Length: 168
Image (cartoon, rainbow, N blue to C red; front, side):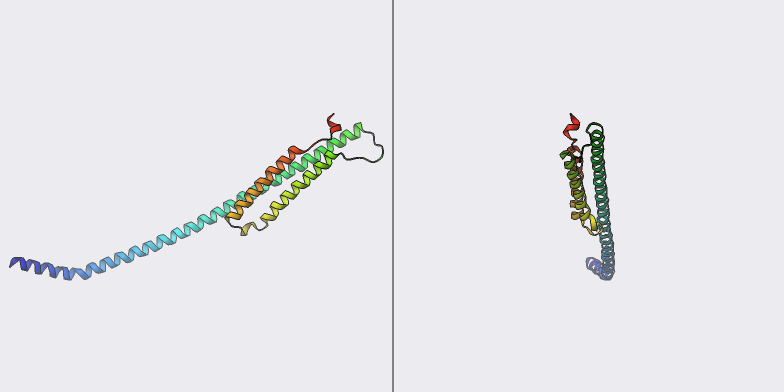
């Protein structure tokens, strides 16, 4: 009989505690869902900030590579000009001015090389005309094109020639 009384008292306590436990577990579940929503929102904001930072970094890299290509073109133009000036000095000193002045084929080739350098830089400038509206893949492609143009222009400097009569 004592066992029955203890069982009855335990069942009554559980009946009273059940709604309280249900409300408490419901409150814990709501708090967990609210916290998950905050965590999701902050991770979403962090991902957007990371993408924006990556785009800004790529834009800066692209602009830097474009500036390198422009510096290389300036160097190429300076080299072409110095070759012309060297030839002019040589020609004035060693070749008498009889009639029309001739421009050696090597200097004409140097001018064509310089024009190719300008064309490469114009292509890269055209590609980057709308740099602010580009996505990551377009910026990466443009960055590689600018680096490639820079290397080609640097190679052009090594391809410049002096007229053979000047070398002898």
